[in-house]
Image (spheres, helix red, strand yellow):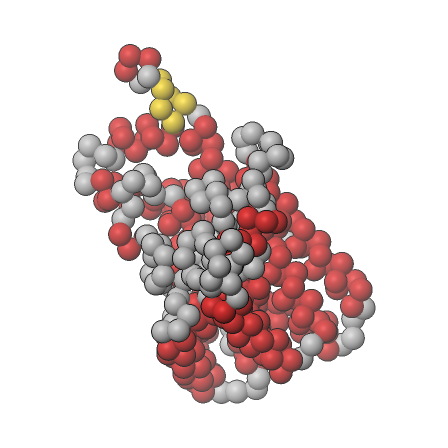
Length: 372
């Protein structure tokens, strides 16, 4: 296994592919003409774009096992470890909140949930579980969460609605958000949040599934057998998720239990392929863009979010004194006249992503990494 100070190269590659995917789907040239493969499922269902966030949480779980296991086994002071975990989680949450406050900095309407906020909360819960429980207990806890969430969402009548349902805005998770996050939710939905409170619990299990993979990677095993078993486990999880989806549909916004199992299975399959190619048969010529991106994933995500915000805030004056955003100006001037709207939107996203690969490569060259 190719490692540098316990680093698994294929994990950096997998993380890099995931963060590049995040930037690509978050930055189309225009939201009105998104390139079809980069669209999320409208509600129930799961597209490749819907794999990206659970992939990242899965990787967080693998990293938790790699970073904390030795310290746990040698009996390091758990209080100090918890302080480090809380610090990392707090930084992620604060970075996420900072992104949501720009440009108004109005705390009365700030969106409290978000991608970085969910990563921070999930990391805090999952890493704490890792310190105080063993793998068997983690699997039991994860199973209880998934089954409990399924029963809550499908059996508990929603106050004010009168019956359990999984529809947008009227389900139990939306009701919890409306009571606890009123005025602080995603501006697109307003009455519920895709990174809301109740759906964060099954998101923790996406990370526990990564911790399970981390434990498997620590086993003394011939690399070929390790790869095969990871792949088999992934296929079984994928099939189980699809089957559960008959009764509890795959849904990213609700982060349904079937979605957790299904995407964890795909993540395991994807990691098995990366591991086999990079760490087993040692084919690495293609990995550089993903390694440099994966080793600075949080910096890239946060920085690209800032760049996207400012590209909309900066105004450019065009004909007859009309002002449009810098992003709109670049898109309509250099891409839209020459391509179909969907292809122009894709090219803009690719160029935006390439800019951040170049930035990541520069930071990597000078050994600058955002550590949280």
